[in-house]
Length: 219
Length: 219
DNA sequence: ATATTTTGTTAGATTATTCTAACAAATTTG
DNA sequence: CAAATTTGTTAGAATAATCTAACAAAATAT
Image (cartoon, rainbow over all chains, first blue to last red; front, side, top):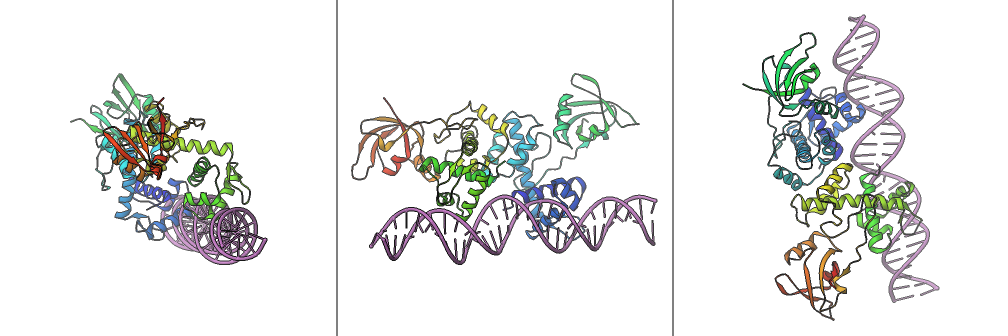
């Protein structure tokens, strides 16, 4: 059984590979807030366990076994987040820190009960998919709002940034998953977009924000 | 902040002191499944943090600070057990192992939400009192069934052993917290008792069992 | 294409938690 | 009480996870 530390390295490697295609030692060290020598030596430890492949000066690659292990930790994280929001009344900006701890609990029944109680959700409170019990993750193929064109209508389906700060920003603008947006215009000089939704007739969203909002466009 | 290991030592010291009046190094080592030298050195570490008092060859004594820290961990443990039973449908014999892990989570809001959702329970699923937020524990002054006399009626209010095996035994006899017992007789040669409850007109309970059932006698 | 910067590695040390072996104190027993 | 047993201590070592310092390779920039 992997230690909590090892689990955190696996998760970081999984996320880095998904977001940037590969995971370097420095990315890994940065993500986890440890020094490069520390990351380097842990990668060697994980390799010995067959969880990743690693050659000097090359990017770290998770093995199938490593990917599955990571996905199962992420499954516990996302089920927990959903449980905290749906069953315990937490806001979507409060749950990450708690789930970060709960994900390391070894108690299959605990997470299965959460899953059952929620009716087997497929996404977490930020729209990220919940891996299944085999560690498989369904692809959502969503676009970011910045790829949409004026005149189109879309619904916010997920976020590519779930930091507490970004979530607080969304809360302050009454933006949440499921919010339907009408795209009014896009400024070519700064890529900001003007949209309408709910009570809001004209709201301006910066390029940064648009990139982080993942949408499903209405046909 | 105490590490998980330190938290487990505090809990063990607290329980040993409550059950046997004092805590020796060998008891502590036994309880935690570590060697005596390990327990000895951790006790010194806890002492340096002001959590216990310790002199060579003498029993270990928790300081007020240490007692409070232990009680707050026990609070999280018992709130979790109650939540698992009352809100997640677990059996009372399944929750200890899970709570043993959840008790180390640092997230005050998580436990406060549990507490609120359950309406601020004062005892856990095994009848043990839940310490309050200040780490104070209410005394229940219950008797064990073995102290009761034939002819008396009583209700099971708590257990002095909450092991999965004992709980399974109780389940198999339809005995649970709240079960009302009529004491029919007590054998003087083995201290076993014959009782009636629910559908059962005559059930024999061994001395061991009677000692572990904590009751409130009807006036 | 060389110099500079970034990235990665090795070596060696530190802290936390654990162990075994050897010895010493305290307690129990004959 | 002396012998035997239990309990406790010290010393020394091991493993996991971390660090800094020093050096080496790779990538970037002039």
